[in-house]
Length: 472
Image (tube, rainbow, N blue to C red; front, top):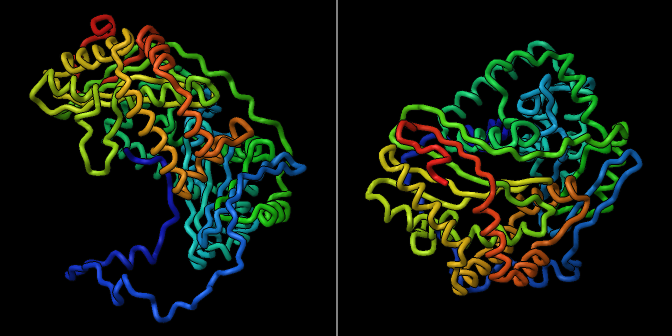
């Protein structure tokens, strides 16, 4: 699936990707089973590498500063802003997508060229991403350049100018994003699922609507950023950084932000419904879901384990999960054609979606979907073995702990939790909580999911696609 992100262009990357006729192989200049001759004994001794916990400080202007010291030579930092698609109104629909593409433009003090050139010259990478909860400006850098990155993150949100010619370039990028999106059925089918399930708030698309691509004037963008780029709607997150230093940098570079008002977030309301779109292609992509768990729900982890019971994407890289994926096994038994099936789970601050995603040939989509729904029915009736529960819990704990080894995943997790809940649970705490989930807990959520009001989204040659009342 195409990530909705924009990275800073890199000249060096373009040079390094020049065509080459050489075939490169791994080569060890020194045997790996012998000591390295030029390695100084005792290097790093005396350094305090004690594991740290996430620390959070709130500045006078309401800006939250959260960090985790990992003693890594590389750091990741970013601003999480409560200015995502769910906050958009009818008059601003799509503006988050526009701001993501306008991330590296200039402000009243510095040009966009100066910001990007300085960061690239110092080996940093800058990226803008957005989801349904936050707009995120983030960067990877060497530990010695943290102050420089924080300073330039501040430049991004400090009174951007949005000159007319810059806005025209943003419009062109929006059109390119939409063209790429339209060629990606997985993106379209999930976006339409959210729209029909929630209508607004979480139903607002991550992408600008085609007819609105030229509707964002400089004045509208300035007005929106003045409202959203305030202390009480921002969280500065750092991984691989000393907290006291990050707080000092935040005070010196982000103190200009007004305190402002917290985001007024309308509660998401689940409605349900169905939507199908005819398009070309040899396959049909379909998602069927009911309301799932929010990030603060007591059933969040239980539903995640239930997803593992039913079967998600392959657990082993480049491997097959056809033995443990109940949904995929049921789908393959129903047809000899091309097919894929997995459980679908998406959680947000105040709601979520849980169901399944299938890909099948047009003539097979009806029987494939009915066979997958049959697995949900069996699970709701208690047909889940103790072995399946144990396997799913082990996979869930491994998934959580392995993700905790990734600096990027830790960064996103800390930012999401602090900006939405104001607190943080470590991967170790979450993994320990998985142990307390029982088979009874899983059966309870399985019954609730199966009896919930469904939402259906499908795209492709849907001429043989059954409607909701034919499926359930």
